[in-house]
Length: 233
Ligand SMILES: Nc1ncnc2c1ncn2[C@@H]1O[C@H](COP(=O)(O)OP(=O)(O)OP(=O)(O)O)[C@@H](O)[C@H]1O
Ligand SMILES: [Mg+2]
Image (cartoon, rainbow, N blue to C red; front, side):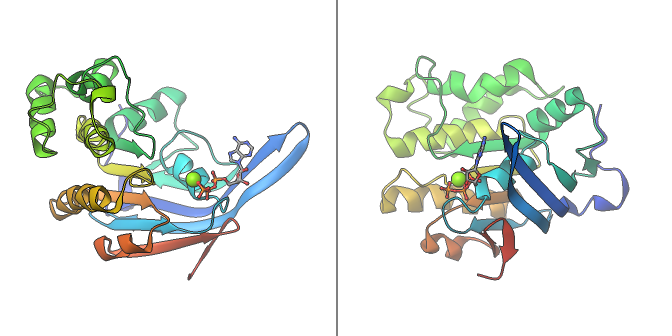
C-alpha cells in the first residue's frame, strides 16, 4: 500500500522539479518539456494555459501517472513516482486521481450510473459504500433523474457531469481535467465550472487545462506553459 502522507510533502499535493519529457520518433529524441518546476498545494484550484502544442497535456499525463518522465522529479502526495513500482503507480492513479477529459471518455453502452461506478470495479476503497456513493454523486451533479440513461441519450453538459461524478467516485485527493469545457457552449461551460467551483470550496485540489480566459475567474492561480517551459504569461 502506498503511504499517501509520508514526509514533508503532505501540504503539496504535487511537487515537480526539473521535469523533462521527450518523445522518441525512431532514434530521434523530440524534447517536449524542458525542465518544469511546479508546486500545487492541497485545496488549490489551478488552471494551466498556453498555446496548442506547448506541452500542457504532456505535463498533465505526468501528473496523472499516465506516463513516466524522461528526467526530473514528480512527487505526488509524498510519493516519488520514479521510485515506485508499476503496481503502486496504478494504485495511486486509481485511488488518488480523478480524471475529466474534453471528450468525456464515457462508455456508450453503459448507463450514467454504471459509468460512474466503473473505477470502483477494479479499485474500490475499503469501507466505502460505493453503491450509495455513485447515486449521491449523480445527485450532486444534478443528474438524479438520468441515472439509467446511456451517454448517447444525454447532452454534452450532462455527459461531462457524469464524467465529473465518475472522477469523484474513489474520493481522490486530486482532480485533473484536460479542457473539460472544450466541447461545451458557454452557458453549459459555466454550469460545469460552477460544479468545479463547489468542489474546490469543499477542499478538493483541482488542476484544469483550459484555453478559455473566462475560466480565470474560477481559479486561484493560472500557470502558463509555453514551448515546454513554465512562463509568466
Ligand atoms: N505520444 C506522442 N508522441 C510523439 N509526440 C507527441 C506525443 N504526444 C504529444 N506529442 C507532441 O508533444 C507536443 C505537445 O503536445 P501536448 O498534447 O502536450 O500539447 P498541448 O499543449 O496539450 O496542446 P493542445 O492545446 O493542442 O491540446 C506536440 O508537439 C505533440 O505533437
Ligand atoms: Mg492538450
